[in-house]
Length: 144
Image (cartoon, rainbow, N blue to C red; front, side):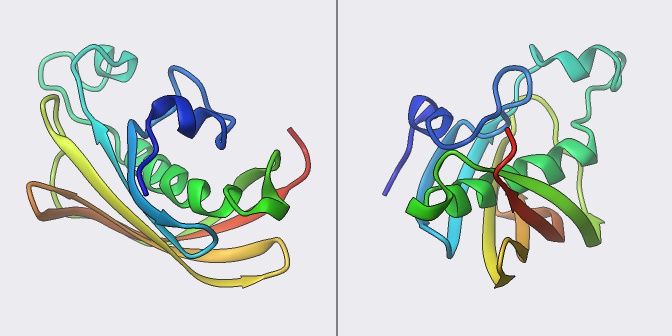
């Protein structure tokens, strides 16, 4: 089941310039999601990271993977209208650079959840090559 950017914005609270998912290519509510980000030189962070050689910051790759997982979590009926907050990052590894022109392909699986707190296993690839992976901890909150 695919979601376009307008449909994603009905689930996630993020907006420009911090919405980092262009399309959800498939997902199962509360279980997993796959999505893409089309990286472009027009993004604000490339003005300073780095002007002479653009590289997508690792923290934004982590955030993009978390947003993909957030679509899965927040598409559950009981979580509609809530937000998913970062509670921690564990075992983050960056294995390649992400640059303008790349299509960042992300998969996030919710591996554990107890109440509003849980853990997602996330991986990001470009052209089939792993560029980042991490264990992402989250907390679903009523606060907006």
